[in-house]
Length: 270
Image 1 (tube, rainbow, N blue to C red):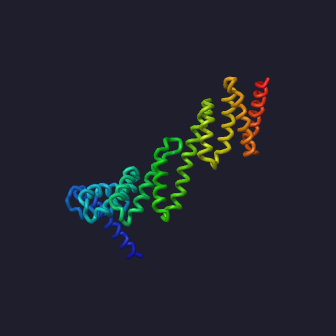
Image 2 (cartoon, helix red, strand yellow):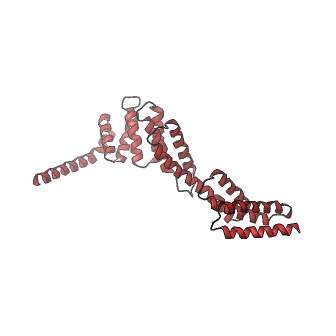
Image 3 (cartoon, rainbow, N blue to C red):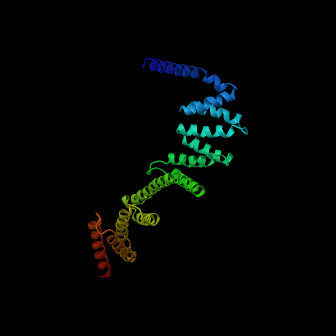
């Protein structure tokens, strides 16, 4: 046991000494011209998850090794280091660039996957602008089209469901927002579009109810020559809602809207 402890202490001391020397010599290494030593150190920094220093060295090496044998490795590790540092924007650009420069590399397929994953990692919460979410979906779909048998396909499909759910929630919130702000015509049109775009959405019941509610408010406040047709549409929307969701929490309120709509239509007939 004492021998093992001594070996352990010796190992720790050696590691600490190495780290101190490395810290002291890093700037010298970075500014020097021993590019082979820089490459070896950069890979070691990457393997030890010191991505900041790895990135500094790989950035220094990219131009030196451009067109040379180690160019592919430098480019690949540089992208991985950026990914490790969670600089997803730069990493995504680097992986795309890697795929273009080294299309026959053993890492080419993985680079395209990593580029799409970087876009996925940048996708914001659903209530924010979803431009990056749409780009992530497009890049994942492009990857699957190109590599349909990839081991990443199941994971990608799960992530695509997640990304599409963000778009769905965003679109619903926009449409529902029109209803909350009493812009009933815009709410009606947007909610109809929502159902067309997401026919199997778990928000289908909510959307259909607010179509009914928006249609009623829009119709009842219309000019008399347009009111009849719009209120008749409310009756049709109620029939679809009541048939589809017979136990809906909104059913009582929907029936009240239906009753008021029928009464308004009867008044128009008189």
